[in-house]
Length: 171
Image (tube, rainbow, N blue to C red):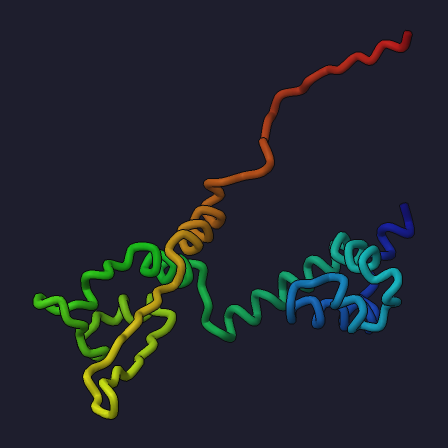
């Protein structure tokens, strides 16, 4: 019991602090443990063990919050951007005659939902005859999935408050 209290008041070791910094790079506990100087052979177990440490969890949470604040990233902004991607109307990139609008004429929220534009010149022998333009949008299903995950609409774990008594009889 005394050792548990002692561990709560002791600061993180330099190696543990380094693990926290490395973990924030890619959220990969095994690789963070290796980069922090733990053995490659035991990195998987060590990374998992480190992430179960309350002080390390708190440090990772604190540093994550600082990074989000520094970058001015909010959950609300991310959800709004995902919703823009999920609800984009492809018709808004076309003129009434069916031709593609100039990029500056496409609404800003729709432009943000575009992941890429490919333009290919079309030739008839040596003469330019036109252009083929391909517009790619970010994945709507993925955006909806991320929104749903945040709102906990899909869960792999069933939460229950029921107590179930199981009796195992040996023969």
